Image (tube, rainbow over all chains, first blue to last red; front, side):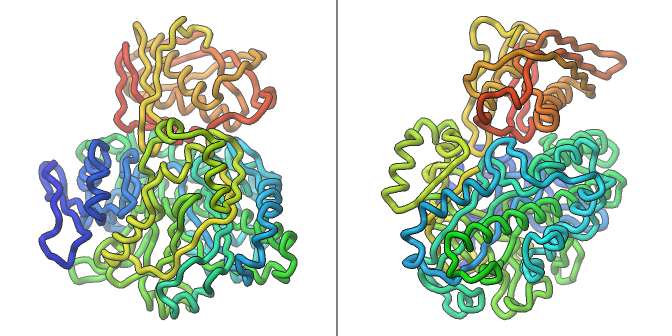
Length: 482
Length: 144
């Protein structure tokens, strides 16, 4: 691997380049501050950027967003686009938690109106939302019903009474990707999906109530429905066991396929197949089905959050007064049209721990936001801040319309555990006025704020590189950890 | 684990996003048992559970990397879908025929429903990332 260097152009202060050598087909391009780059030393994240650059058909660059950290196959924060016709699709570029993603609901309330009832809120949310390891939800799906979920995504949930028709307009892809085929999903994956809908899961999944602490772009904030001290709700979850099994199944499929279609890749976790091949087509159909399951899951969770919020704060005046701002996918492969070398081209964009960031005027974003650009939701950590940004035209040129998806981990789970005890962490958060409930103490400590990069640094690079621009900053009030 | 050596023969290594396990033994069989022990210690924590049932698994692959990854993923699948909690490996056999590897194992353990409380953690899958598979040493990254 050649050395990483800053881009020559002074205007590209946040661009770092790894020139192509060996089997790399394109350069590695990392958007980051110097401090983020320095923190990657000793990890395999940059080598993973290089490995991704070897994918057959990869266009323009192997991109990494400012929340880059070591993953498996792709780095987390990795973005790679390939031609839709014959480029490689790889499960390693999408991940196990297919369409892990986040959404934000906005409320008419301010922090002052809710501050005395936050304890009630955290307890009620914790009781209502099945969270934690292996937790099954109250929804049991027949095979037939599950197939409908896999095709219809969030629409299935809305039709069953979990949410509002207008929610669908504010989801990426309308909450259901085209091309999903339940027949491409194994019996095993279906089995894992029957009781998972409406569950939060564990790890970094969460539900949070936060408040708008600062507004940077008043006009856009107004269009997004945001105002100072407003209370909003975040929901972060994915496709649960069904998605994990789809990924595991197709990594095995691709292990067999890769030798048929091209030279070996530097990491088996990157094995894939051309989109035009039977294996590539089948994986895309299964991945889309799992993505739809994730959208249905977040939609059901949204319904639970609305029910609890309206019960604890009846002055909200009904679930319609908690509209969905937007829902974005973090781990996904999307068919999109981008301008490549001067001409429009249909490409598959792998986003592994990255958020789509589409600009003003783009037809794929809701009409309501079209003058300002797509909301880019960036949850930070449970003790500091989160951000809402807006998509940019520059992101279309720089990263196939992508930006960061969060703060990005800085410490391993073991290191986080060594830093302090769950009791110390809860005390520290309580002192900041943050109410936290977690399914397990282990899970809580592993997700401690200090285990993450400072989201300020990540947003500085994201905004500075123009991948997305700052609209509002938020801080947490109530957190439910899976 | 039933065939677990008397001394702990695994360790958890730091990995920023996930967890990496290093396990060792005097041969494939012992090392595979050690890595299995490590995975379930990570998931369950230090908890005493009944050994109320046995069940078998078999996996196939092109090489030992495949065998290791599919062996662990089979356990994760059975845990997640059937609620089978492996506590010890009663039998384990790896065979090779015409370039194809096959592993057969029998586990002893219990059901998730028999556990006194929720497990500590979730493991989504075993990955091929930076996989090291030797008779005396296995290193594997789990997606958590």
